[in-house]
Length: 149
Image 1 (cartoon, rainbow, N blue to C red):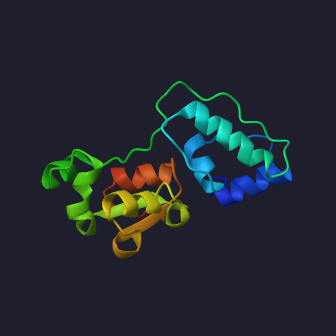
Image 2 (cartoon, rainbow, N blue to C red):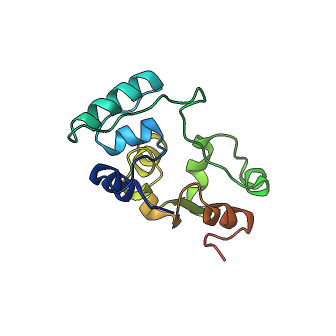
């Protein structure tokens, strides 16, 4: 419940918090870097960006999982629109209720990537901004509603 990267970065940089979880590619992009599919390079580049913020912040080791973003959709929606991959969304983007992270509109790896890679302009579709990785987002998906109860 801390908020977007703008809030958590400010809290980290000021010493208000000592640690925060981060997706290294997304964190790098937020600080103006360019993320790649190489987590070791993303880690090195994120550390360099953080050093440029005045130092004193260390990027710890990344998990061996895949450093990617994903979208989830209810099965009946996937079946209705024949959705199997991100590019399938282009033709039906305006027919869906999107629950996106609160920082998506300014994130190059969210709204920027959707527009650049798939032609989906988040300012022209039905979007509700929700805290990422939160119970509000999960509840909205589970309850088939773009807003939490």
